[in-house]
Image (cartoon, rainbow, N blue to C red; front, top):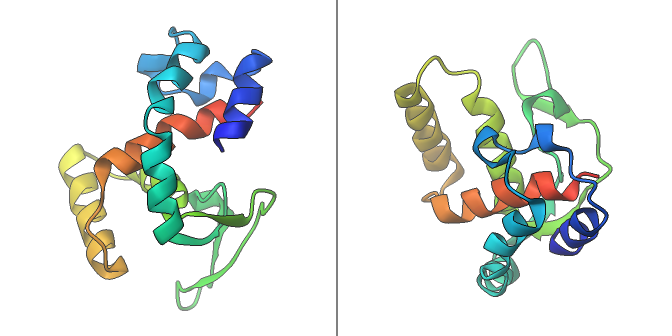
Length: 138
């Protein structure tokens, strides 16, 4: 993802609409520079927590069985591959957050998800991938 982000940023091809509102007026090279100092740590984490990742795991890309509400499949698999599971978790939780009516509901849902998933969420790691992802689309 970092290699893709470097390419997209170098081509000045980042879509500002994909960035968090508070970052839309910041030069994309600066946004990438803010993340670069974390790359070594994130690669260490990825090496011990690698998983098959969707690459764009958001609610519209998940197909549910209408009878059971179990996951029945996925669409838009163009970025499917091995990666740090947090790359997918960051997008999924951020997208799901948009469905809740307030921040307390969203935090409770994140906590419930993490408990069922069997992890303690690393919020810094989530934030890293959430800020890196929009720099890769261009």
